[in-house]
Amino acid sequence: MRNPRTIIDLPLEVLDIIFSNLRNLRDKLRLAQLDDYLGKAFSYHSRSDYKKFSPKIHFPVRLYRVLLANCGTSIVEFTCGSDTWSDLLAKSIAKYCPNLESVNISATLRNSHSLQFFLLNMTNSLISVELKLNDSCQSPRILNAVAELKQLKKFLYEGYIDRGVNQLSKLVDLEELQLVYQGRGYRCRAVNLLQICGNMTNLRCLTNCEISTVMPDCPKLKAIYIKFCKCRIRGYVCSFILKNGKNIEEIDESCEPAPFDEHSFLEVIRSCPKLQVLSTQMGGIKIYQAFVTSLVDFLKETASTRKEPFELILYCRDKLRWFRRFLQRTSNPEVIHTLYLYKF
Image 1 (spheres, helix red, strand yellow):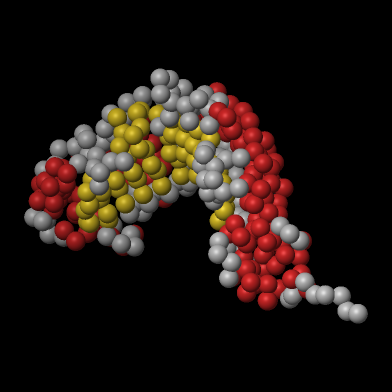
Image 2 (cartoon, helix red, strand yellow):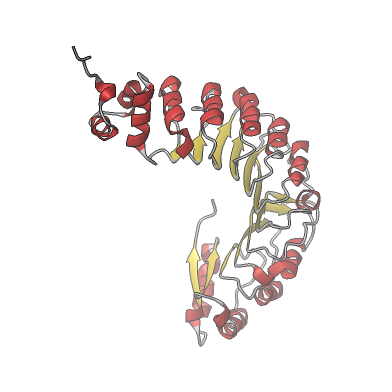
């Protein structure tokens, strides 16, 4: 007498149809957890659906562990908020996701320990890390763990800045670094960018909340974002751009004090032949006809070095109004596109 056939005797193509007709992910994972072959069938059905994995609130972690066990090798991006973080989930990702390259995580004090161990367990694969830590989260141990990610190319950090930030100097292959201070009731610790970035020869993009020491020369720098930043060194932002402007294609600044006056603004344009986009408050600049005409004349001469018309984005509506008025009186207003944006 022949043994009765069951669902696990069906070929993957038929099981794929069955999974497609299940109502939601919960039902699919409940089926997948019943047998290793059904888990394989779920992986076949999912293909690359979970290349970007982001857990949802109130979804059972035990079912996510089934997903990770069967589809973990296909996951390359992981995004998780502080309200969806789970120690068990983190352990499962470290176990089943050897190809994970990018993480974006928000953390609290409650999950800071497990986040530290998660990062240490992913040292062989991560190349991009974005972290947002709340006020009460202790950052030294987490930043120490980040410093061990030797393959890291991109690190974006938002949180309380303390002594742990100096450990980032170990990330010599970093190409993009962002340090944004967030800490109510605490003063931002002075960051020695020269000490941290001195050996980062591949650094292309640097974002920092406060400039209190000189920055390392970055002759290959392509973009500089100095948003909501205070500079303690008079005139330093302008002098840094003038010295490293050869390859800069984009500048976004909203500094205190204002880094440019009329003369230094034109000098920056001249020293950055590849500059395509400049976003600025123009805080220290008085808009008048001769200034706008000089800018237009220079941009006309260097138009061949730019792929598109130069784009000027102003964070001040009044200055934009005056700039456009004078721009229309020049001989070549088409060399500049102007926009107005609110500061975020």
